[in-house]
Image (tube, rainbow, N blue to C red; front, side, top):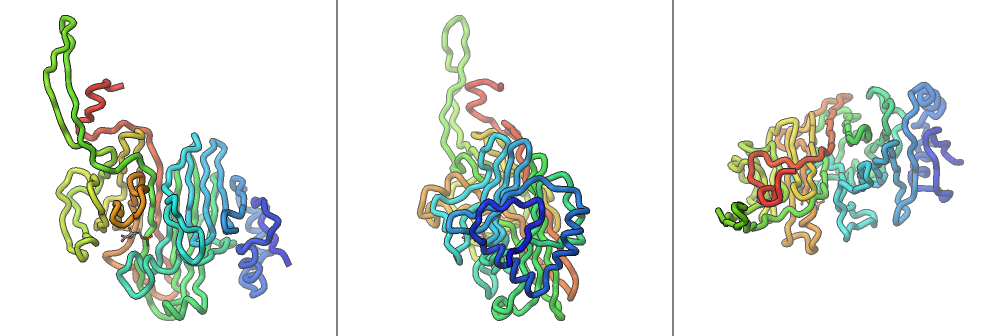
Length: 374
Ligand SMILES: O=P(O)(O)OC[C@H]1O[C@H](O)[C@H](O)[C@@H](O)[C@@H]1O
């Protein structure tokens, strides 16, 4: 028997995908009510077209596209966003050239969902179990408002008997991924379907693609042209970073590289000259990741996830040159784990967007001085 996909899906591959098999299983177990959800789907405003494709290694993935050309690709294994492209088809997320696409290893890059444990603090595998499971389409994402005129995908992960042996709490983890007007929105929801309360930590690992995070030593000249004579009026040198994070200044953070010792951020902005793995606490709802070279600023807005993790492995851990062009700025709940009573639901919102900018935030950009402020 084949699962009848809802009308907005176009199956590109004739080979049965693991996702279809998983949905078939749910269908047989009576978990999916095709009649009711088909009617609901018909009543809903029709979303943008989405394609289900088989990726490398036969992993089923969904591609959402907007009429302006921007797109997002989600692998159902781990519900991992592996690509987000803007109107110019420029990739905005980092994916390691050595990314492992073989299950059960998580793919390094994109955006990964970490639940019920973020990082390695706890008894579970690093980043919990959700990124190493095959998710399915969520036919009934209520009570979230139906998605309207933007491209949207609802996925769900339910605890299985095997999961309960590792983490004995029954849960439903839902993820809505929406692409609209250049914004990539991820709404995560965790429901306690157990008969006892449970607590968890959570994170969305955002691997952002940047020009070069390293601190560069600039030597530059400022000169005057007066009476056709080049007059070197000043010789300046300055350390300058192409990539900086703003919004985390003055906050407390746990330094994972120093046994989670708590510090207070002293810098005006976060720049990189080595490995970094920090959990910034009670962060503001908006963080800017400014890339001078690409003249682009990532804006990360979040709600329900008070902490932010900043991570770069540098060459010590990366074993490759890739680390220079990536930075992880994660939305997370770590310091105070979420506690859910039976039937309660937690919701976390994340919005990523980019603005074109040559934003200097008060810093002197030497190339602007030399080449002018155009
Ligand atoms: O290598 P992964 O398991 O994907 O984790 C990548 C990184 O994610 C987070 O940012 C953690 O704070 C790091 O400690 C961890 O190394």
